[in-house]
Amino acid sequence: MTYDSPSIRDLSELDSLLSEPTRTAIRSIAQLDGDVLILGAGGKMGPSLARMLRVASQSSGLEHKITAVSRFSNSEVQEQLESSGIRTIASDLLDEGSVTRLPDSANIVLMTGSKFGTQQDASHTWAMNVLLPAAVCQRFQESRILAFSTGNVYPFVAANSGGSIESDPLDPVGEYGMSAVGRERILEYHARQNNTLMAIVRLNYAVEMRYGVLVDLARKVLAGDPIDISMGYANVIWQGDANAMALSAFANASAEPFIINVAGDEIFSVVEVCERFGEIFDKPVTFTGTANKFALLNDAQQAAERYGSTRVKLDCLVRWTADWLQRDMPTWQKPTHFEVRDGRF
Image (tube, rainbow, N blue to C red; front, side):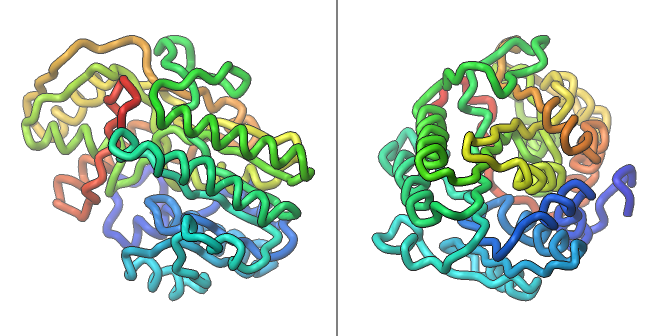
């Protein structure tokens, strides 16, 4: 299959595409010495990133030992990773002593985090997003760390601005965004104190066929539900491209943490994308609210210049998503709530 194909055939083809590294990602992984430990590997992005890392390692001829750590509440995910040649460890990393018991590893991918449920239990969000990264940094002071952050550290910006860039002041909306800034500050502190090589990826809206902003919008159009357009604009990135860019950033890790936005290269109008879904589904589209011209948007120009442009563009993502839903293929019941403007998740 190519990236301009009209559809993704099935789950097997989807997983294969999501795990296909770019040449830049392969070169980055080829520079790594030693094993790789992925913390929080059981989430939406973790399994495909682990498999991509495995493929990139094999392509470089180095065969890094890769270990994925998660609670693995879904045993099927753990079994699939094991069958792909990835060692797994089932662990709740917030449990006392869990981080100290992890095996030594020269390279760490930190994917742990909490967003949804912050309004109900903010303390858990802060523990996951700040306390746990601090423990990881203390345990792996001499390791190279690739840490995932979020575009929620930025304020809303005008749709015609191109999005927030890495040097912009951090001014998050809501407590989740505040905790994400806290995570970054803790990471920066430990990197500088211990000369830990570190890269921080600010990710904004990864999507694939089973979840994401486009799936949320398309499902509402298909069901004939009114669509809240309070968040009038967004940019999304194919999860396979997000994984590849993140892994590419491993090579840029430094003791003065390297920070980079990973996001789609096209800012789109929610109204226009929903109307496009309406055309494909031959369904009328109704909207509620007023499209605000300020939104959570990331400018990923630096990532494109360093690692290459995204392989899957917005129009292709829209077509793939529509086709997937029309065939009633599997999706996850994990709405993004990207339309939330008060930061309460």
